Image 1 (tube, rainbow, N blue to C red):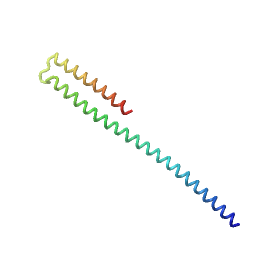
Image 2: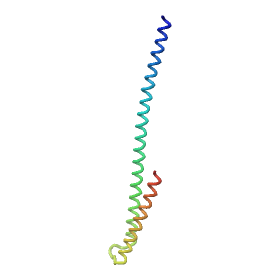
Image 3: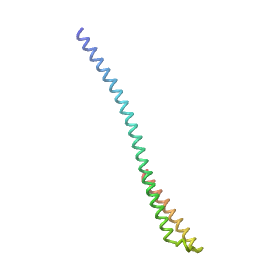
Image 4: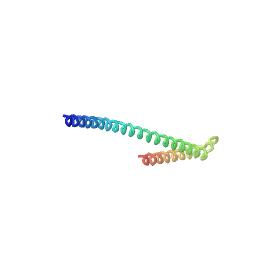
Length: 106
């Protein structure tokens, strides 16, 4: 009888440990999912932050280049066209830089 009780006790302990293991495995899976979502969110926020920084720097460079190219107080027709071409060129460079930047982060 005592042997049967010990056997039954071991079986109960084994079942309890199996249940606890299943619970912990499930919790680990949930925590891993949360961790992955948080990491993805952080990576995305960093990408956006860096992208915004690059955009600001490029806009500033475009503005400085356009301002340095033509004096805004005396714009003649040819100078106006030159300024537009310069701005278009800077904008094109900006878009190319952003494409390279985005491709690098993917």
